[in-house]
View 1: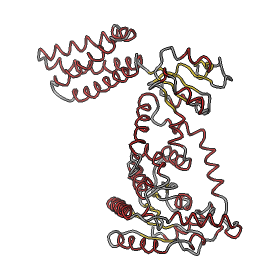
View 2 (view 1 turned 135 degrees about the vertical axis):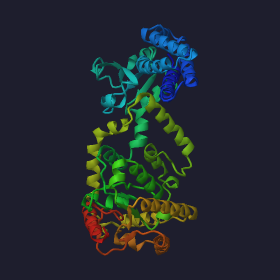
View 3 (view 1 turned 180 degrees about the horizontal axis):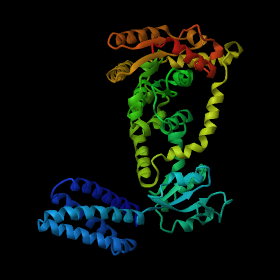
View 4 (view 1 turned 90 degrees about the vertical axis):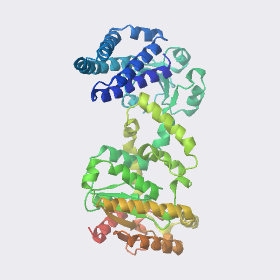
Length: 489
C-alpha cells in the first residue's frame, strides 16, 4: 500500500477519535456521528484499492466495528435516546480496538542503511508503534548475515533486490556521505529517502547547545533561578556555585530574542513556575545591535527551532522551514518524540569532556605571539562591528517584554555584564558602552531590577580567562562567588 494512502487512513482514524471525544459529551450528536460514518466509509474505500487492504475490510475486527456503527445509526434514525447513548459508548470503546488494529496493520515498513553507532540505537529512535524495521543494510560488508535486534543485516550488493520488495521508507544512518548521496538518487527511493544523519547534524551539531538542552529535558526542574545570555554567561558563570538552584540557559551566539524565547520555553514547565525567584540576564555592550538570525551565525536557528519553533528574522527561513517541516512529518510517522536526545546520549560523555577540557585552559596575553595578538584584537573589532538601528529598536522592545514578564510574575531580574580581559577592554569602543548605559538607564526608570557591570572589573586577570573574551573554569567559579556577594538576594 502506498505511503500516502497509509498516512491518509491514519489521519482519518485520528480525526474519528477527536469527533468521538466531542460526541460523547453531547446529547444526540447525530451530525458528528455522520462524520464518523463518512470517515469509516472513506477508509474502507481506500483499503479496497489494495489486496492487503481488502483483507483488512473483510477481517473480523472491521466487520464487528461496521455492525456497531450500523446499530448506532439505526438508534439515531429511530430517535432512541437511551440506546444512542449506550451505543455511542460501545462504539467508542470498540473504536480504540479497531483503530489500534488498523494502525498496527498499516505500520510503515522501514529499511535502515548503514552500520554506525546511531544504527545501534534505532530501537530508541524508530517507534515500534509507528513502524517496523524490515532490514538493515551494511555498506561495509563486515556484518552481512548477522542480526541486529532480531532483524537481518543484508549486504550492500543485495540492496537492488531488497528495494523491489514492499517498503515505505529508507533511513540513512551511514557516515559515508558519498554512498548515501549515490543511493538517494535511486528512482525507487524517490520521496522515501530519509537522511537521518543530515537532520541530526543540522539539529545536534552544536554540542554546547545540545548538551545543556539534554540536561534540561532530563533533569528535575525545581530551579529557583535561570540564566540567559551569550557564551560569556554560558562559560563565565558556574551556576553550581550560585546561591539557590540555577540552570544556565545561555548559549554561544545567543541574542536577546532567543534569550527570551528560551526563558519562555523553560517557564512553561510547572516546576519552573512554582519555584523560580531570580533570572540573571547576561548582556554585552553590543547586545542591542545583535540579531543572531541575521548574523554570520544565522544557521544556529536550526538548533533553536525544534525547541522554540521560530527562526526570527532569518532571510532563509522559507528554505529552512521546508527542511524542518519534512523532519516533523517523519517524526510523526516514524520516530519517538525525543529521538535526537536518545541518539545523542551515547556521544554526550565525549562532548562533556571536550567542553570541559576547552574550559580549563588559561589565557596569557604576555605569552601570545604577535600574530595571535592581532587575531585577538581582530575578534574584538568583529564583535563590535555592529551598527543596526532597527535591530536596536527591536531588542529594546524584547528586553521590555522580558522585564515586564518577570515583573508581572514576581521574579527578580538581574542584568549582568560579564568581565573581559584587559586586552579586550583596551579595544572596546566606548561609544557602545555609553549607548548601552543610556538604554539601561531608560529601563531602570520603568522597572525595578539590579544592574551589575563587571566589564572593566579589576577583580579578574588573564588567568581567569581561557581566551581573550571568555572566562575559564576557575574564573567562572570565582565570578559566581562575586555574584553571590553582590546580588541583593
